Image (cartoon, rainbow, N blue to C red):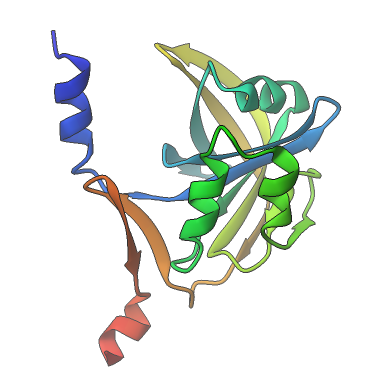
Amino acid sequence: MIDKATYREAMSGLGAAVNVVTSEGPAGLAGCTVSAVCSVTDEPPTLLVCINRASKNNALIRANGNLCVNVLAGDQRHLAMLFSSSGASMASRFAAAAWDRLETGAPALIGGVAALDCEIMSMNEVGTHTVFYCAIKAVRSANDRDGLIYFGRDFHRLQPAAQAAHA
């Protein structure tokens, strides 16, 4: 059996986009930093999001039935840190950026790389996490922005291909 430390060390070599996942509805406002997001299929547009079951955000997102995957831009590291802080109130997290709503009512970040507004279709429990399967209801993207990935236990900025070609 693979121990937790060995697994985590191997996973630190898997670069992942940094996202703030938000939700709002009858259960209230939720928001947390998530790197476990993956496209499932483009027909119909579907993605999956994994969130720790011990997180208060998990219960809120589950009850609201919606979420928005806000893909952070290279200059939004501070949002990743803030939304991952257990000491930051939900009000202070959302006060640090500009938000609007697309279709589901979940907060959509203004100025990110993309906002993927979703309705939760189904969920599976796997170990410590819930896997949310989400139907994408609306998309906003700005592919000219630098991206933000988490790799090797640190944040790194990525330039869009068009900018990198001119650098």
